[in-house]
Image (cartoon, rainbow over the protein chains, first blue to last red):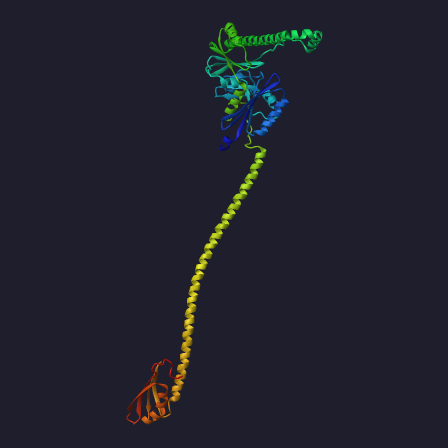
Length: 293
Length: 173
């Protein structure tokens, strides 16, 4: 439409991550990105306020999010009989057919629940597999793994069709730290004279402790991912395909360590590649694709 | 494509912008309407002007025609008056002439012109004519020539040519 080139469109993508909301706002005019802003909001109230303001400022707004629940999957066909064959009750799901070759489905209950969760209307709700499928270039005997903070999404392709998909949650172990009361007691027992001399040492200790905690957490995540991948690949070979997977592509959103490549190579005897993946940007790209921008 | 939901139709403008646009639209509409009104008015003025100019030309032509008619009527009136005067003069002249004719003399005809009078008539004798008729004629006209023809019964036919020389006025005033 003629007016389109003069009107700014706001593409907003968000997803819930550890009770926080990650958000990307992109303002587009005449197919050109004129503003991009990433935010992390602590509460739904903040999100509601931000979206309300955005809707007021930009009448042409498109809000998109991704379904992160476990009740979703992939069927390598668009035929309803295929769902029945996989023991999926078609009345309780909502599915979309992609290129007339395969389908993504989601539990109707989860979809409605997500819609009702927010006061405002969400324009696009994508299955978590959608951004991966959109991004994936090589779709023959490749496994793509989308790594989020609390979950990983796995899709394995054969002859350009996703034949295997899985969602697993990562367990975050709490690292024990001294609580505040202990800190106060410690501070009371320390002489002021000693305080200054020991301060630097304490700081150094704290930093090294934090670092070691981070490393522990990272290594733990990598181990968990490798473990999940091992099980998935086992399941894949046993139930889905006899062909060997060529490569595992890790779409990383949390900056996992390079050690995961070594772990995969050692444990799974497979080549892998880590790609820094921007899920929010991809969601916006999907939204643009939906309205042909 | 990939989404389980379809977006609702989006408005193009904010509510404030819509309000402003409505005001702008009304203003533009009023401006355009007024401009159109002026254009139409100007068109009709122009058209009326043409009609009035045409009328002026027609009326001028009529005035010219009427002036001509007036002049003509004036001329006709002058001519009429002239004729009336002349007729009156002629009438008087004829009356005077007839008064001049003595009883014994009979007139056959006379030609009354502007500066001349030719009389044809019968007189018993030349003397009657010379005594009774000639003197008044000579008193009026500067030149009088009379020719007599004797008739078998002894009476005379005469032709009297009387002329006024250098005098345009009618002789029988």
